[in-house]
Length: 112
Image (cartoon, rainbow, N blue to C red):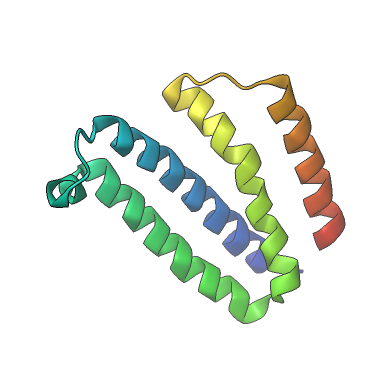
C-alpha cells in the first residue's frame, strides 16, 4: 500500500469524523426539522466535509481494492469519540477505549 493511498484513506476518515461532530453541533442548534433548518451553517459545513470526503474516497478507491480500503472507515469509531470529547465535552468510557483499541487492531490486521 502506497503512502498516497494511506493519506487519501486517512483524510477521508478524518473528514467524515469532523462531519459527524458538525452534524451533532447542527442538531443541537436546530429547533425544528424543516426546510429552514437546511440553512444552518454547521449543517452546510458538515455536508461540505462529507462531499469532499466522498471525492477523496472515490480517488482512494481508484487505486486501492475495496477490501483493503473499507476497514479504514472503522477508524471513525476512534476519531469521533475523541473529537466529541474535545468539542462537545462528551465523556469517553472505558468500553469505548477498549472497543477502539480492538477496532484499531482489527484494521491493522485487515489492511497490513
